[in-house]
Length: 384
Ligand code: KG4
Ligand code: ZN
Image (cartoon, rainbow, N blue to C red; front, side):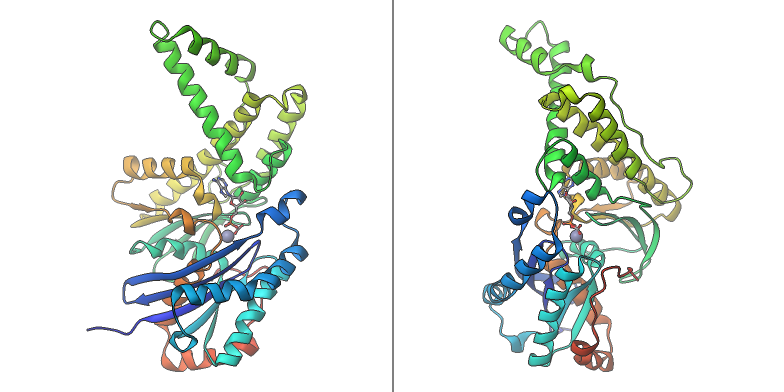
């Protein structure tokens, strides 16, 4: 039987991306008709982090052009839209207010239902854009504001198994970058330096095993760049890795990185030292995330493992999870979002809203026509 599609117009402004998307769900088929993201990275970079009031001003400036672009690209008219969706939290309140007020205004003037969506629900559902989710599902949530293990017995049913007791993973990446005078946002650049160090290590071991055949020039370059002995003692703690729960902690790791950098102040501009710090930090993070994820996979036997949030863009973390799943849990399907949906975007809010909207009764959908007056932005909204 052919069903009629649900078309959602979604808005996301919880942090430093102004994003609007149009998503269509027809049964199991999901299509992103448009996904426009206007990034504010360049604006906040000189401050080393997101400045909430500046973010709000920029969202206010960009929201209408981004909305227009999204509607034009999707080639939909307001009459084609079944429901509006907006990130209602968690996030920076001045930033959330711009998206929610825009969505409420549209809902009021267009007389449309409006759904408030939890930002992390969106990140988890980014995985549904290309894959059919099977339950039970375990989500490893790793973003700038969250680090959680979430168990879902079914769609839209969340149990938080554990979460960070202090810093989130992305936040720790950003802080380590700052300590090394690397630009904001730190995650991608710390990851790049970590990868460079791993390559250096492997070229060093290749060099040792093929030293007879390698050219003199190459061997000089490798030994000049790779001062393994000088840095070999650096290793960081894996916080809470053996704790008998699903919680995380990254502030001790961050402090340990800080002390190491202070101890080797003279090396702060040495590229190999920076690469080594980034590598060891990333290793400590990944090992900790993998240990807790394995523990949850063993205890709850989900059918699917997904990774969600901005840190899911980390290719080493994805590779390690892929290999963990294929070696130790071959019956579990591991899914990661397409890179364009890893970082904040509105398509993820749209797909989560489409799943929510499809479960509602007609009367519940009618009640959503009043959301323009009841929906509230909540900086500390809890996933439920
Ligand atoms: O989900 P997201 O876009 O925003 C929040 O909801 O917080 O995540 C942003 C975080 C930042 O901390 C950023 O440094 C981190 O994700 N990130 C990465 C990578 N790309 C972005 N962390 C590690 N490796 C990456 N490749
Ligand atoms: Zn996010």
